[in-house]
Length: 352
Image (cartoon, rainbow, N blue to C red; front, side, top):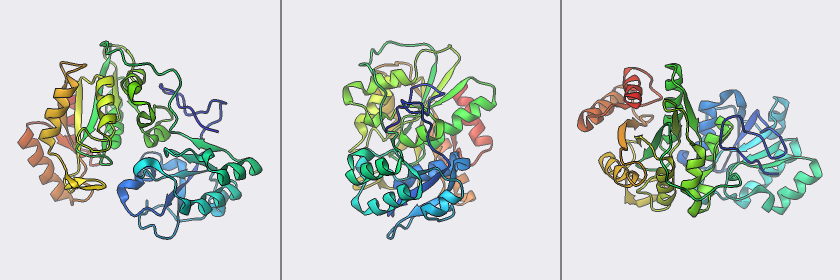
């Protein structure tokens, strides 16, 4: 069974009406790079009430900090699904994970996956699920009926998070900004474009699973015409400078037609994640490239501000980095995970 996630809120259910089976046991596989466990961290940070613990196999060196437990213990604590918390290059499910996934099914858990590899294509999982009456749920399934983009301007306002790289805060920024705008009484919605965001929000389109000709059309479908004062905060993907994922970033930029964008950056990173030969582009370069390419569908596009991922910095280091960035670019700079005046100024820029 796969779950078809609709493009508007209120989804999060399968084609047969089946809800995603949370609470979850978060599966970390044998991941050794925190950036490739962003799905698990996203659920931990934004949907902690849906998580009971984590489960990994030998070789893993990344932890969410949740209680480690095997599937039988998780079931005893109320878990209903094993959620694959890894987002590795290519979205593959290696053979080394198979015993753990089978243990989850045998213990009474459904499996929820956002990988490109579809669960039911693995005979061992398919046969075990059928025998045990368990569900294999693939969230990375685009909805039917996506059309080629029209490029026609539409009502409503849109903000897109873009980045110097992948896995450095575009989803967190979009979630925090949409929540911050809502606290101010502004009609705003988070629009999920990746598997983790969809699992958190319960709706969205997995943009990197869409055929390339329909990428921009999917983004139009995700953020359709709305009230002129309504704001869609669209979760960005990849980077326009990424050697693997730039095409996805460009289709999302053209289709979402953002009025403004927020550049997300990790100041501790020097190279593209997983591509050490590619140096990280500067924030300035990302602003110039995004404006130049974004003008194709929205000539008035502009940068609203900067979101820095300062998780590797102390409070004093983070403050210096934010101040330096803001002064250098003459734009508000904030870390959405460090709420305060800087984040409020970023919100001010989003509605100015």
